[in-house]
Length: 513
Ligand code: XMP
Image 1 (cartoon, rainbow, N blue to C red):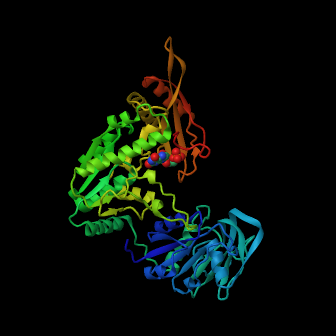
Image 2: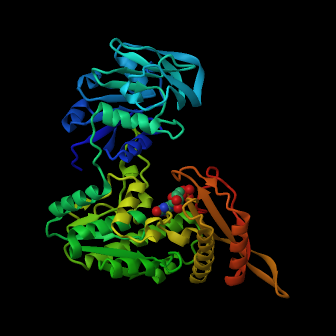
Image 3: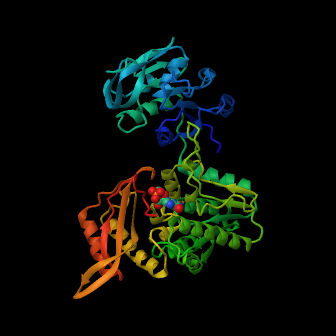
């Protein structure tokens, strides 16, 4: 993406790396993340407006700790070092970093000692910041001066105004730092002179122009799942090239209640897109007959998805490009060099990249999830779809324990729809990260009317999480659970017991299979 005001976050393995980038973008300044392994020549070519060095888990004195070419500080680009990044700046420029016996962690009062410091403009003399460190800067490099202190840090911040080099020991990107956003803003606008003109509408216009230039009159195919990312990517693509885009929506019959029809209505009726819906439910169920092992079920569904998609795309003749809804967290490489958490199974069926296309187009590659949602809203995609919770590719197939049958799918669709409706009625939709029903493979005895029943148990699951890597079970109010349970028992035939899953991840996972 071309932008003449881009800030670089140089990642040294800090856990808040993506958060820093988001905070910068919240200031309407475009920002990208690169690993500290990126050669300096590459950085020079990009003419960054500013560079932010992130935190990291290491000590600068560790042999294995990530360092960088010292020439970085002579590029003439303003730099802000955060935590490890601050220590690295001090260490590399001749200051001193020492190890403390006490670790300073959590909310910590700090005091600005240099009232003229540009990065502390409009920040009170005393406020609270978020600290997380053992090492600290004990002596500033020549030409620098300390600008803030805390109990454990004689240099909670330092700067060299002429060279536009700044460093803070604490984390301005974390919300617990009361004036964190103000400090970042000061750095971007007062130190670096950013304009702050990066807005979603300009992203949309620019991306559409880029797509048109790349695609010309050629054809593009998009796998649509009805999830947020693929939906936004498809609509953006459609705005750019109209009917030269064809979307294939493989309905494997294990979607949530009425979901397939909703997807069709939105994309075909509202957006007038070329949409091919493949109703492959029966074929999928046939392949799943008698299969109870979760991994095997996943494999069968994943494989079936790809084969169906391929078969359908072959019917279309020559199509040059494949459009995918990859987003920034899927591609960004972590500073420590471990491959990113690439959720291959999270893409639409994990389409292999080599099924005969000239190129892949990923229009959302630079965006975070909340930014994708904003683009979706601006493009007029219904709120329901834009705020959809994550839904696994294999769908209800992995929420029905044991063998999947058409009857079980129908039972689970009903129970799940009731639960989601009750969560929505209680106004909790955006407060719970993911919530759904699971059809366990267990039957138990109950009594209904005057008769004995021997029916299935439905488990309800709700979690709160920021990254889906770890999750806590959601404290859904009892009355919402009660209403859901009552309605499921009364309205769904074949279920006589409802339980709520109170396990976090780890040790459990979010899905049951
Ligand atoms: P787990 O169960 O691993 O799930 O804690 C973490 C998140 O990933 C989603 N998930 C999937 N998404 N295809 C997907 O697109 C899959 O096969 C898949 N499996 C799990 C899950 O819903 C949760 O949000």
